[in-house]
Image (cartoon, rainbow, N blue to C red; front, side, top):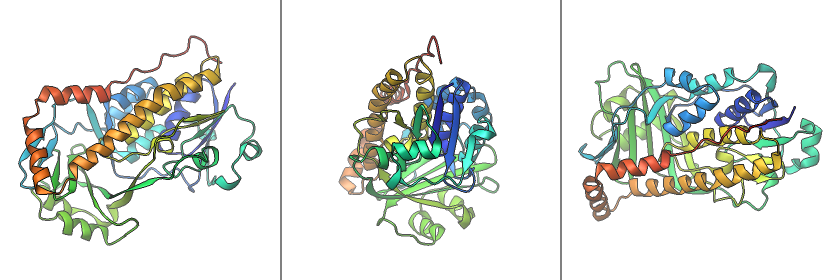
Length: 373
């Protein structure tokens, strides 16, 4: 029986644990927090990630708790449509991140889960891995953008880059809010998205330029920045609970030369932290997890890890680049450039947008190995 130690108990780590345990691995998941927290705000799960979740038997559970956000699209500062979505009901679900984490946690045997397991990157070499975790066949870094595993085993990796933007996320009850079409609104270099998250919840997120590390009364700042925007934004912000607002500065990870070093592999944000402007951060983490679980269960682990790097790294890094480009386009603030952008998008044929989306969502699931160990 092969063994794996997974550092990090978020979406990437838990999904990897599910996939490996289903394929006969003995897995241990080490989370530095005192508990596996099922918190957060909303998350979009696109068709590519749903296919990956189907491969580990969890797709239908996720569909059951997710909501179809409708046609979607982008509006300008007056509330006029710049571009409508494709209207394909199978493209994306919106659900609470906590619901996704609960589904993943329930699929991992309880004896595989360990909390309060903070590992010091300064001494996190192979000797330390063997001493603390035992001799494992595979060590997986799923410990986020500031990954200690990456710091220890990728000492040549460039540091995270602050994009100059911060984001806010929150959910709130839909009661008292008039029905609306989910959409993003772009104005003065700022972005705010609102989407129904089922019949009784709303997911709201926003982005704006800000100095790194600045913290304020977050809901007051949101209302000041966005409170006069087109409906339904004022009503949603007026009804929001200050305790529900989450704020994070946006960092990206410069491209790594490899996602694999010897018997160490990176998944999720540890491998490719990206700007959250295509809704693909969590989706790519799920793709990583399922790909690694399938490939690593073949007869030759070394070759499987090479294949994981060969297939996952170009795709994830390409989507990270596209996410950052989308952020820059959405946050244009110079009026002439905004006018050109809006007009170009209004003239874009819907078929062209659908083809671009289809290319992003196209992801061939790795074939299950003919034999596994």
